[in-house]
Amino acid sequence: MMEHRAQRTEWRIVLLVWMAGLGAAVQFGKIAISLDSFRAIYDVGEVALGFLISCVGAVGLTLGVLGGILITRVGIRRAFVLGLLMAGLLSMLQAVLPAYPLMIALRVLEGATHLAIVIAGPILMARHSSDQARGAVMTLWSSFFGLSFMFIALLAPPILSAGGLSALLLAHALYMSVLAVLLWCVLPAPATPQRGMLKDVPLTFLNVIRIHIEIYRSPITSAAALGFVWYTATYISVLTYLPGFVDDSYRTGLSASLPLASILTSLTLGIFLLRLVEPVRAVQIGYGFVILAAFPLLWTFGRDAAFVLACLLLLGATGFVPGASFAALASLNTTDTSRAYATGALAQMGNVGTTCGPPVLAAIVSGFDLLGLFVFVVLLSFFGILVHMVLSRRRNASFARID
Image (tube, rainbow, N blue to C red; front, side, top):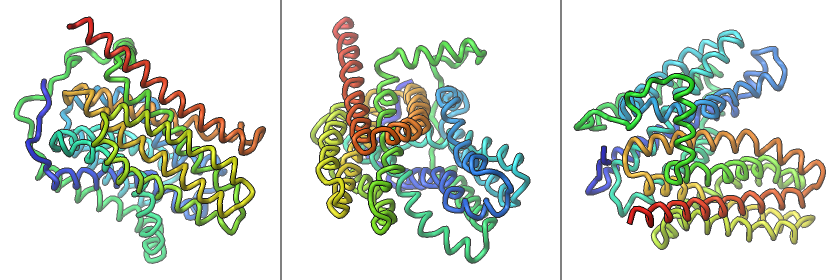
């Protein structure tokens, strides 16, 4: 099935879908921002408390590609709205503050709704944007995670003060439910049934494995995901460990400003770059900027004010990569089905990066301090450039054989 091509960007739909992405990120942020409240309720260790956050991402880590397969069978619009509705219901159930094992079960189910939203969201954004605006639209989508954490850091404390943890969870439930209703009303039903090339393949374990292999073997459907994993591993790791290299007086401000530096670059210079070069090349250029921006860390270490500026420069450089990666996904994959598979792979590899990056960097920093962090950032960015170089050559070779 060929993609729906919008003659003009339907900004009402684009902005509502983006707002749904903000709500999906809150599925992580609502726990992270209120961990002290959960600590007072559940008599469990710190690792178990941390699992309240990470178990949502574990679903994407294991079932990302499967999610992409399933939503093509359910239908992109239906999967997206159902994901929002179920997210609202699960957040409402969590507001009861059940026993820890039941809360974990609800969080795992919430991870499935998160996966449905973050896979269907960029497909809908691409579907309802014009060719000219698609790069900017996909960059907007890529900003939802960082912006959501900034918003919840501002909004959650007064809600927690006024009504406690249940009020925060109920506010999230209401937000997701309202968006589900609005999007069901404004999203047009598909003119023809959604048909994937694997529509009639039974989802046995062996077939799911084969589908994974086919997706990751393709230099088209795998490209965005295999280029994105290096970004997520770098981004979450440096956000976690860079503030530890400055004095306490700088640490809080640096932690708050690092995500903002990345978002500002993504929504300004990142969009401008996508107007000049095609998305895959923009990803490679972004990784090149990250490599260059890592060097000032070595030159300024020990002088906290200068080092803070170097950290902001580095995080600003990372902002070129996410928007270009989502734009590459939309430009390389030209049907809703292939975009679903590619987005499922991107969700899966993104979770691989966020899961593996921090512990690896923690081990490196413990042995090699800032030099280890510098090498980690440079190597991962180099691999990001190299992977896209290899996959581009494979795509070009395939096109040459077709010609």
